[in-house]
Length: 70
Image (cartoon, rainbow, N blue to C red):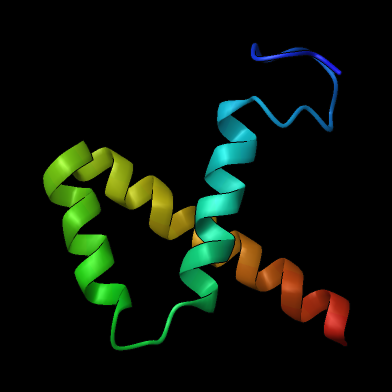
């Protein structure tokens, strides 16, 4: 276990990448009518680039989930 600081382990749960993947998976599970509001709050609080990064992460995680299902 790496503690409360990110490390180089691929399964580190304290990294920004892990947080982003978890957030993307949360958005995928949200009711569709709640997603635009969530995106709007991200854009307002974190800025345009964070919004675009989140949209890309959600797309990537969605593609991964549908590839596994095939």
